[in-house]
Image (cartoon, rainbow, N blue to C red; front, side):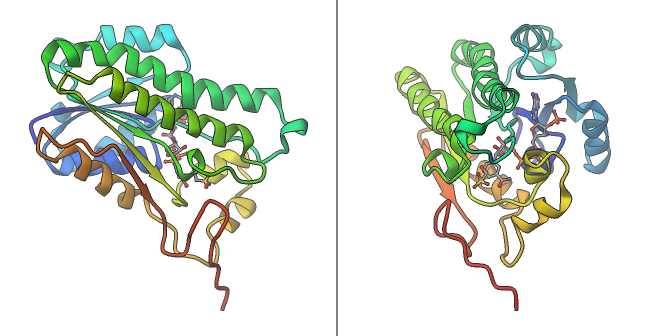
Length: 253
Ligand code: NDP
Ligand code: 8X3
């Protein structure tokens, strides 16, 4: 694959796994996240030539930082072919009427506004070049709301609507839009949600076989490598042990 792939939230979990699968297939990677040293460690762990990766320390919540990160890409990196809008997080499982304002703002600013900023600054170049693909990482939480999920689920429902809207707005161009919407994937996601409470985080995945970040990356790569006339709009994938956002089979024997 001789394409430039920009992945947000590449320092961990699904984003890092996407970086691996695209790197293994010869893509050039622009990797963005706040934890720059994690990006450096990731690149070292990939068996690629350092010239195959360009690292960007970026907080997607900061609109001017997103604008300047895209505008200041060196010329050999500026023709982005694939944008993987993966950066995202959840905070807490509080009831809405007891929720923390800061948690809401963090989720809305990252999962919705960050994704919008990235898309707004990258897609015009894709239109100009006549090629491109935006792959958003949504969630089963955007299709079904679970107790305490209120605002996080709302942000992922917004991602679903934004993906649909972008597809409509790009009709008549060759730019593709895909939403990959997983169920339970074991990553740092729950540690972030429960602010480092490892015990509580581990329980989310106990008694079942969750999806792995590589499972999601395989699907992202599949969507990105269909023939140019094929647009995979939406993929929902869950572990076999999961039937919906609230229905999970756990076996502790
Ligand atoms: P991780 O916590 O392992 O990874 C999240 C990534 O997002 C990190 O690389 C983090 O990097 C990055 N990130 C968070 N906030 C920002 C920010 N403001 N600016 C830039 N990067 C940011 O979780 P996952 O890999 O599981 O999550 C990836 C995506 O998948 C998210 O959108 C999540 O909602 C979604 N998802 C996860 C599921 C799961 O069960 N794990 C299921 C369905 C969807 P850093 O902290 O270095 O900035
Ligand atoms: C992450 C999956 O069900 O934990 O989006 O919200 S879930």
